[in-house]
Length: 81
Image (cartoon, rainbow, N blue to C red):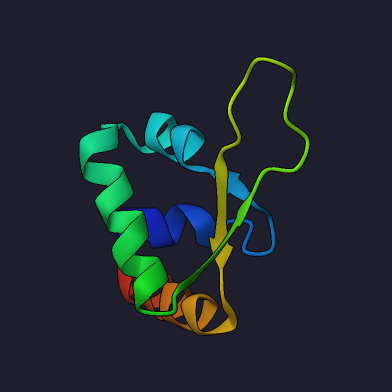
Protein backbone atom coordinates (compact mmCIF):
# COMPACT_ATOMS: atom_id res chain seq x y z
CA UNK A 1 0.00 0.00 0.00
CA UNK A 2 2.77 2.43 0.88
CA UNK A 3 4.35 2.11 -2.58
CA UNK A 4 1.05 2.74 -4.36
CA UNK A 5 0.27 5.71 -2.14
CA UNK A 6 3.73 7.21 -2.71
CA UNK A 7 3.30 6.90 -6.47
CA UNK A 8 -0.24 8.28 -6.25
CA UNK A 9 1.11 11.65 -5.06
CA UNK A 10 2.42 12.23 -8.62
CA UNK A 11 0.81 9.46 -10.68
CA UNK A 12 2.14 10.50 -14.11
CA UNK A 13 5.74 10.96 -12.92
CA UNK A 14 8.32 8.25 -13.59
CA UNK A 15 10.11 7.27 -10.34
CA UNK A 16 13.26 5.29 -9.59
CA UNK A 17 12.95 2.36 -7.23
CA UNK A 18 15.90 3.68 -5.27
CA UNK A 19 14.13 6.99 -4.62
CA UNK A 20 10.94 5.23 -3.57
CA UNK A 21 12.93 3.05 -1.19
CA UNK A 22 14.58 6.07 0.40
CA UNK A 23 11.28 7.92 0.70
CA UNK A 24 9.49 4.96 2.28
CA UNK A 25 12.35 3.47 4.27
CA UNK A 26 12.00 0.13 2.46
CA UNK A 27 15.15 -1.85 1.68
CA UNK A 28 15.83 -2.97 -1.89
CA UNK A 29 15.36 -6.65 -1.00
CA UNK A 30 11.75 -5.91 -0.08
CA UNK A 31 10.98 -3.07 -2.48
CA UNK A 32 11.92 -4.61 -5.82
CA UNK A 33 9.80 -7.75 -5.34
CA UNK A 34 6.87 -5.43 -4.50
CA UNK A 35 7.49 -3.38 -7.65
CA UNK A 36 7.72 -6.56 -9.72
CA UNK A 37 4.42 -7.90 -8.35
CA UNK A 38 2.67 -4.56 -8.90
CA UNK A 39 3.98 -4.50 -12.47
CA UNK A 40 2.96 -8.12 -13.14
CA UNK A 41 -0.56 -7.34 -11.90
CA UNK A 42 -0.91 -4.32 -14.19
CA UNK A 43 -0.69 -1.57 -11.56
CA UNK A 44 2.66 -0.15 -12.73
CA UNK A 45 4.29 0.71 -16.04
CA UNK A 46 8.05 0.31 -16.29
CA UNK A 47 10.65 1.65 -18.67
CA UNK A 48 14.41 2.03 -18.79
CA UNK A 49 16.06 5.34 -18.03
CA UNK A 50 17.24 6.69 -21.40
CA UNK A 51 19.42 9.51 -20.04
CA UNK A 52 22.16 7.56 -18.33
CA UNK A 53 25.41 9.32 -17.39
CA UNK A 54 28.59 7.64 -18.57
CA UNK A 55 29.70 4.97 -16.13
CA UNK A 56 26.29 4.36 -14.57
CA UNK A 57 24.17 1.40 -15.60
CA UNK A 58 20.61 2.04 -16.81
CA UNK A 59 17.86 1.90 -14.19
CA UNK A 60 14.19 1.02 -14.31
CA UNK A 61 11.59 3.73 -13.86
CA UNK A 62 8.09 3.11 -12.50
CA UNK A 63 4.76 4.90 -12.61
CA UNK A 64 1.13 4.02 -12.07
CA UNK A 65 -1.00 2.66 -14.90
CA UNK A 66 -4.58 3.95 -15.19
CA UNK A 67 -5.67 0.80 -13.32
CA UNK A 68 -3.00 1.49 -10.68
CA UNK A 69 -4.23 5.06 -10.31
CA UNK A 70 -7.73 3.79 -9.56
CA UNK A 71 -6.43 1.37 -6.94
CA UNK A 72 -4.19 4.03 -5.36
CA UNK A 73 -7.06 6.52 -5.25
CA UNK A 74 -9.27 3.90 -3.56
CA UNK A 75 -6.51 3.18 -1.03
CA UNK A 76 -6.02 6.89 -0.34
CA UNK A 77 -9.77 7.36 0.16
CA UNK A 78 -9.94 4.41 2.56
CA UNK A 79 -7.04 5.91 4.57
CA UNK A 80 -9.06 9.11 5.09
CA UNK A 81 -12.31 7.37 6.01
